[in-house]
Amino acid sequence: MAKKVKVYSTPTCPYCIRAKQFFKDNSIDFENIDVSSDPVGQREMVKISGQMAVPVIDIEGKIMVGFDKEAIKAELGL
Image (tube, rainbow, N blue to C red; front, side):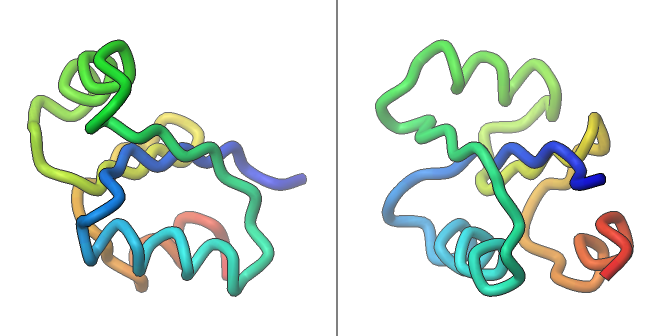
């Protein structure tokens, strides 16, 4: 069963773009939350990560700050 993935990002962040492309390339469904235009999403991101940095990736409650392809692959079992 696929894990639930959320990506907190901004449209101009290069690591956010890479993270979302990685999920698309691997056919992994994800919910994108644009924290530059979604204040509720931004507060949620800060609450779960303690940071304003993007991307923040939430994989079934496992919070990752930044785009670490190997850690993401390990968490998703790829």
